[in-house]
Length: 246
Image 1: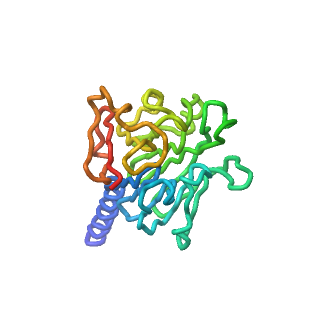
Image 2: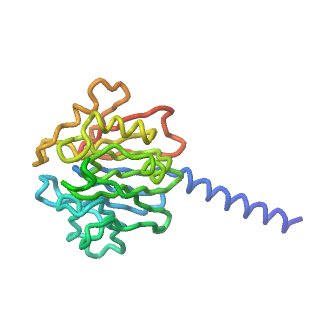
Image 3: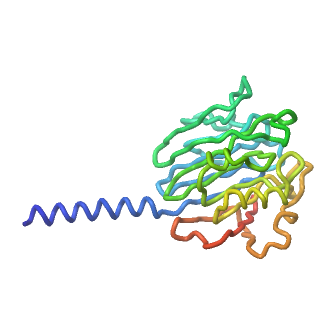
């Protein structure tokens, strides 16, 4: 009887730990442009599309476990300050400029990518782009990189169900406010975080986030650059979270 009770106690503790991992909070911090630090409840950190000084934003002072690069433009692939990190996952080959398939598990995070384009002409103007999807703590988070077009049905299926979408809205070199709204309707997430738009620090000729959130009653602005989200805390409908880069 004692052995049975010990086994049941061990099993309950194991199940509790598993549930905790699934139900943990994910922290998302924005550094400007398309650069975020995403941290799982287990402490695994991913830096997306690292920016350089030329963008006008301060360099992130972080030590990530993983860096993902959606495409090889200078404002998205500045890895020089992070030489000691264990993994750099590139959506495109830095030489062939073609998509590279990424399907990795790093610690408690699963990562895969989906090939898209940087423009509406299948890459003939701006080249190719990769969407990265991160699966952690029961959440699926998509970073769209410099997406330049509405998604095809094949791309939507490849991305799969997502809860949080980090989406460019500044136009000019990516989708604009109207197109970003359409892409969100395609992916149907519960949370959207706009990125790649003009701020007081940005040196790029792109539009501000105001065009994207204008008239949207489901948008809220956070004074800082960080918010947390959990599977249990997902809203019922779409909520847009606008972050400050500082």
